[in-house]
Image 1 (cartoon, rainbow, N blue to C red):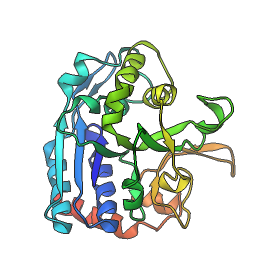
Image 2: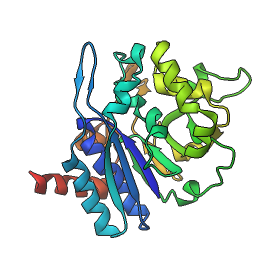
Image 3: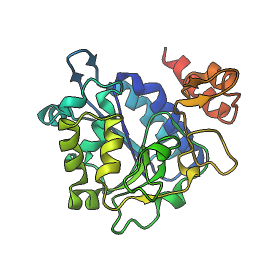
Image 4: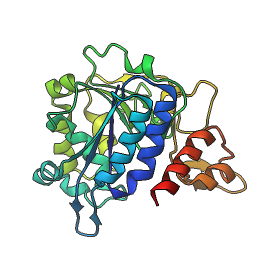
Length: 274
């Protein structure tokens, strides 16, 4: 199974938790690829993820299956050669757009499951991963909130959350989907630029059931839970954003203990590493 993550130096905790959750439910070889870059904008400087974080992940993968691997790929040069110019200083970091450069990385395999680092695996994703992708650029799940407000077709709910995508790289290269997305991100300022571009330009995306990217709350059939920002209406209308590595808040704010074994393992690894 080939897994793609993207991000900067702040993604280490999420990367570790997400991969630990995968190994709990999938013991066959897992090949993790991590795209990172040093990115400097007019207002902010971002540092690439270091090799030490990926080495820790590789050690955990090897403990479960010696054939697994983890590779850090610095694409600073690729990114700076063709930056998403007008979207470099939005409320979302430029790292959300790194996945749009994956077609330019030759060592990446043809089939990739992209995951945000705030996604935790709850059940085996093998059946989902192995599905036929003929003629499909990527498979994703509707965005929990965006599906009501953003549409590519007026007659249908079709706005996909880009935090989990099963990507068919040969088809993406054939249709030049990421090429076109990068062009739009460079010239048109957008809300959630990578997600907006993918939804606007994809020719052959396919929708999967909600359980493969659950963005609201845990259900009995959830495969991937995505710790996104959500709206809460009691005791007042407010947003709630809790990430998996905020373990105390996962318990106190979300009242969630489903992943305590994974989070305990994560905490132990972090303690040993100090």
